[in-house]
Image 1 (cartoon, rainbow, N blue to C red):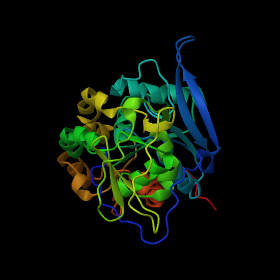
Image 2 (image 1 turned 30 degrees about the horizontal axis):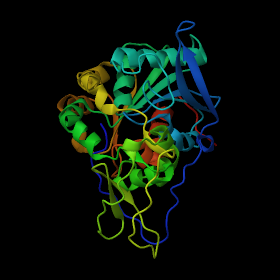
Image 3 (image 1 turned 120 degrees about the horizontal axis):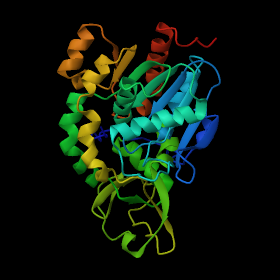
Length: 359
């Protein structure tokens, strides 16, 4: 579900650029879409691109946001003519809903249908649902319940019931081990790359803004800069019992950085994923059979062949869906390998004649 493997190559030589990049470099439009009755509306942040071809509805994984699809959007748009609608799920990104803690599959799949309806009416263009991780599970539930009219295809990325259920017990430990806060957006981007959460610097620079938000620093949040380790670079600074990475500039000494004081800002996670634990089982239990039973052309993209469970293995041998194992990457597949994911999705769209090739 969420990345648990933190091994990643360390940079050698010049300091890399960890500054954030705007969404507008990848999407054509950002919109806050209101759904529901008057005076009781939920507002979903969406990003759009393209004006012709099928509508690719992109659903991100747990803790991420629609911005995790930014680099993929550029890659897929250069290969086929399509429209993209990437949305921040409830409780995530810049979306604001009345019941932000309701992460049931019924509610979240209804959100997808409501947003598509608000943007494209009752008869949208041909829709291909594409989801990663938790978003993949929601895509499967949305397709199997036929919530979105004119859905013609389904793509699930690195979501397999068996491996997901096995990993549930370790998610809380992962959440406890990551930093609670960062002193800057640049530092958060640097941590995400060096920790292996996102193994693509370009994607991290645009997508981390959807995972963390700026907050005023309270006295209890002040960083204890006296706690340090003297390991060689990259330097590991201990913050509230958490570890994040800070690369030293060439020639820089080991003196601690000045801690931010009261009145200054810090960056914290937009969503407390630990509070959604009661929904984790419901997201994934039964998704393999739901995926197989969807009477749609289907594609399953995996970060490793070892993720296949028994039901999907049998279904794949029976030719019930297309499957592709991508080159080595972490769980954030569409961020780590956006070009490879775009190639696979483009081939799927062209094979079923959902879209036309560019050029």
